[in-house]
Picture (tube, rainbow, N blue to C red):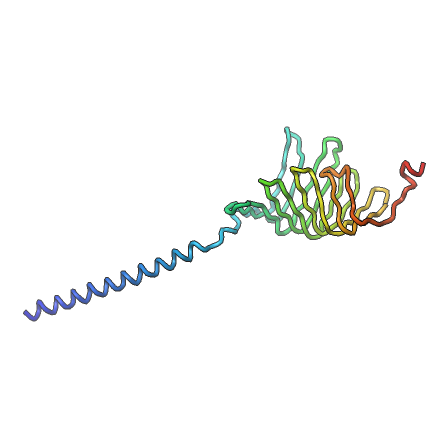
Length: 195
């Protein structure tokens, strides 16, 4: 009878131990699920190195872009693409075969909103030779407007320099632009006013 009682004690101890382990494991799982729900989804879903992008409209190239690294954030409410190591864009016009360029140290693109921003040593050269330099620029493609509140330095092909101390706004093809609190040197000898 003693052998039977020893086996029963071991079975009871084994049963109680396994129940204790089960409750410890299940209580840990509850804590882990609470932690999983609080994780951020703001991480890149796609990373592209040495990205070359070509945009066409009716078979005609309208834009060429290059970025050392592009990160696409798609798992959030407002998805966007970021070029953290800089970006260079060549944009083409049907009227002029020579492309205009935009370079910046950082760029962010909201594809659904058709809104773009460039920051850090932004340089824009139009296809007719006008150069703009600023620290940040924003492009609302739906409204076809480019704007900034930073100081803008503009150099025209004849060498004239204009400074927009409080930024500028322009049509996205740069056929019209307006400076805020502007100053500079303007060579009017080559304009219609001088003739």
